[in-house]
Image 1 (cartoon, rainbow, N blue to C red):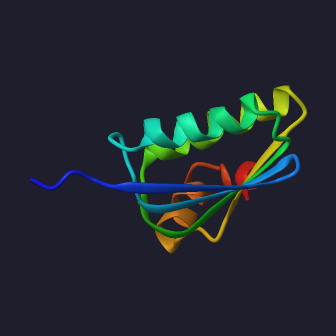
Image 2 (image 1 turned 120 degrees about the vertical axis):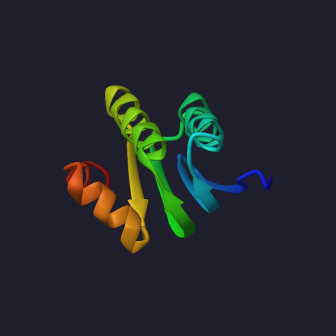
Length: 103
């Protein structure tokens, strides 16, 4: 059995961070995403841009991570935005009413 893999890259520019994800976001990898986003907020980042160009699939556990991080960011006057989601992720965001919060 192959374990799901997710690569996370972070590039900071001042108080802005670009997080690039590559792979799948599911229950096995969502904790990695949560940790990366939390680190940004702990480091004083005020704008987090998440590039999903190379994410093949994002399930409800990934959506939960993004929504939680967005709420936490808003609470400390920071922001989180998703960029370039796949068609599947775009449908997930639209179906759950989350697109307006995250895109």
